[in-house]
Image (cartoon, rainbow, N blue to C red; front, side, top):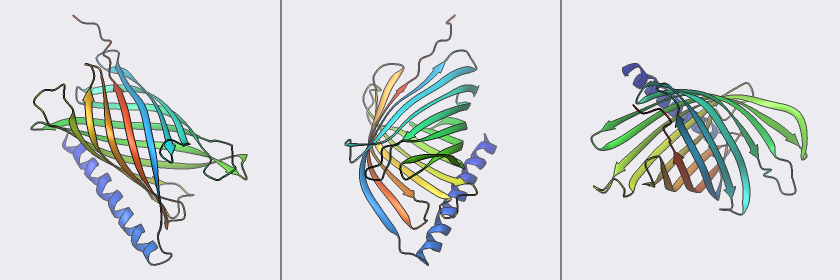
Length: 253
């Protein structure tokens, strides 16, 4: 447990150091450009427990730009989940993303093929539930030029650390809880020159149980993403609505 906490702290502070160094470097060259936009993000996230040790993860995501007017991406992810302990899991899986063109008049969606590995731990401090997640992703992002497929890909490795806090507001567990989370994403690869810091996702909202195995969170997420140029950023004010399905198919008794 202590080793895991050390790893989490190392990844978080290393990522923050990289981000601060890069911000300082580009502050000395070109002025920072920030593009603010409104988005919405919807998903269904399932973690099915099949046996004492094994289960399956399956997620579907869609994100829209200009609130809901225009597509941003569609994403599907599956994984095999393994319980080290009741509060610690490991997963290995793959994902497929279809990214909508951002240039006016373009029509072709770029694909992204993804493998990932993750370690997740849940703990409690008093009544506050904490979730730590470290995820490592290998990403093959399709390159499109002049709205045509090039049959070439950019490979990157991305490391993500998520800290999620669920804070009870009411005594009744059927009432909503407050959720605050932050996820830092850093990336590496020979084509990553100016934006090792990829993005940060900060979220505040509510978590509402529907049944024993179904819940959702709903709220505001600020996504701050650095572009490949190093001095250009997207600042996405995002309405987020995520559903969570956690059935347990283990035989009882």
